[in-house]
Image 1: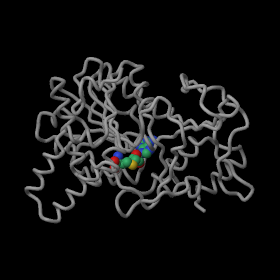
Image 2 (image 1 turned 135 degrees about the vertical axis):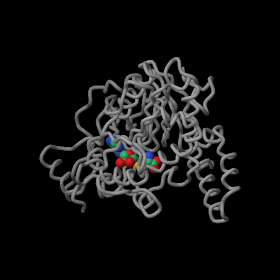
Image 3 (image 1 turned 90 degrees about the vertical axis):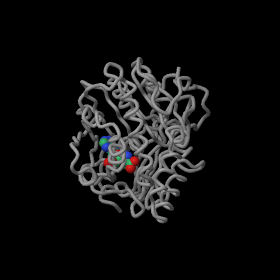
Image 4 (image 1 turned 120 degrees about the horizontal axis):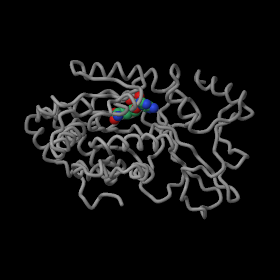
Length: 367
Ligand code: SAH
């Protein structure tokens, strides 16, 4: 049993079942016992691997996209480059290295990392040593008086979701309780939840037993990003696992440990937890405050349009046979069908008067 599991059991026995969102927040972000608090979960020896850890091509193309957008905006004198949930700092390091092709961009930017994990902050400091980087617990700490160039990879999927089950025409929240043996298990609240405001527009005809997942924390964060882009300009690139359907139903709450699926209730604090991002919902929230939303595009398509194949060829020209093999396998996983190439999606946000984001076409703007 994990130490956190014991705490959660006592909390639930004392106060009653907790929401999936509360469980996810405590399991991932508890200051002492949360999954991200003390460990670096990334890489082949960890629990999961992300695009920037697979290949430098990913971060380099993001960096070039930021520079391109800065140029398209008329080279603003000051710009805040910001990453949410930077992991090991690899994506930011690759992006900034590629961005050096335009030295004026380097002179205009300040770099901001939004990260809560002390262990990962240390790791980021090592990766980005020598660079003037600022850390923040929340987006609110990032300067808002200048254009923002923000990106986040596999960050929104770690923000908590709430789940509701359809019963006799009502919605009942799915909660985490404790069974007679003391194990954590899912229960359904006997009380109907007054239709949560965020669910507005959900199809009332959803079948008995249907499960609805909502990401209020994600939506609020995306709205806050959009509310900065609207007056100041800039762009946000949000990359994640998820879908873009009118109503997203079904349980996508998952645990991963050592590169394999795990039980999300079995060892809180020791396994990674995530849920798919509802791209439609976050795009709608961004547009509700006046930002433009483009896509989402499949990651493979997006990187293809940014020139990943050409960049790969250039790197292969100067690489050893081992480096060539690693570059090619990273490329295949980043863009491949049934790999990250179509499982991951990229949503872009801009100001209403901003140029289209690199990699997106005008007609891909959502209405
Ligand atoms: N973007 C990185 C890492 C993804 S893992 C990559 O692509 O490799 C998720 C990251 O988000 C970690 O750095 C984790 O510590 C951070 N994180 C998770 N929840 C957070 C929160 N609520 N606030 C800030 N950072 C968070």
